[in-house]
Image (cartoon, rainbow, N blue to C red):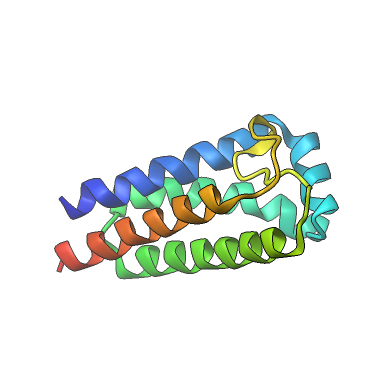
Length: 125
């Protein structure tokens, strides 16, 4: 069951990374508008894709679970700060597919994904 939970998060990461790559120019533009440096913005989709594959193939690796959780924590804090500041810039969490500002729904999604990773780690022991 732990592998399944990790794989669910892996699929979400892979889809998010793929959507950013498919809408590359819009992703870079949205990320830059949010104050993300271009080099970092270019690394995020690749990181999401790699973690997506690793979570799906090696979901119970402590290292992969830890890195994935840490990345989600960073994303969640970034979203919370954006929401708190009243930012109207698109979230771009799933590339150009999502053209709305970040909301509490994005925070809930990320907390749910982190919960799945924690459960995968506990079940997988």
